[in-house]
Amino acid sequence: MKKALLLLFPLMIFISCGDKEDKEISSFVGTWDLTFMGEYENADCTGGLDSTNWDFVQAFGMSVTMTLNDDGTAEMTTTVMGETETGNTTWSESSDGTSLTINGESQNVSMASDGNSFSVTAMDDAYCEDSDGEETSYTDSTSCQAAGNYWIEASCSYMEYTKE
Image 1 (tube, rainbow, N blue to C red):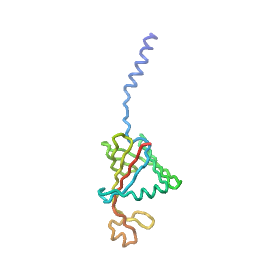
Image 2 (cartoon, rainbow, N blue to C red; image 1 turned 180 degrees about the horizontal axis):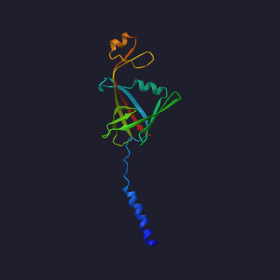
Image 3 (cartoon, one colour; image 1 turned 90 degrees about the vertical axis):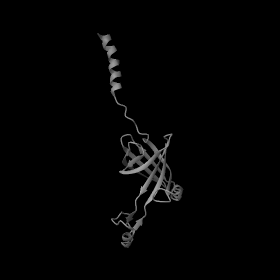
Image 4 (cartoon, rainbow, N blue to C red; image 1 turned 90 degrees about the horizontal axis):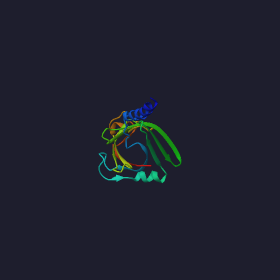
């Protein structure tokens, strides 16, 4: 009887392990460094890329690291001139892998074929901002500026992230 139980025990372990469904882990899970950033010439993401701002912040030692965890949480760390700021948020991937939603904002993405880098194309709508940097309810440049605020034109930016 003991021999039968000893033979049955490994079989039960094998069957119970085989029943577990393997959870597919997204290729976006991991730690990523921002390695390039630019703004398209046109708000519809066409034209040349201007990387002047990227060059400028690089001169001040800016670095951005994003860690995407398989549980849907994310950590963003930004360092500029030795000062580091870290924030936690959430993320998800579209079923077709062409967009990431980070902190509630969806971004178009393209993963490199080797899985070691991806790019983000982000379109931002035009908006009105007050002198404190807060968005206002004005929806056109004329009324925004007439109220003494700043009209921020629509834009499209491009970012590249490389896996650590």
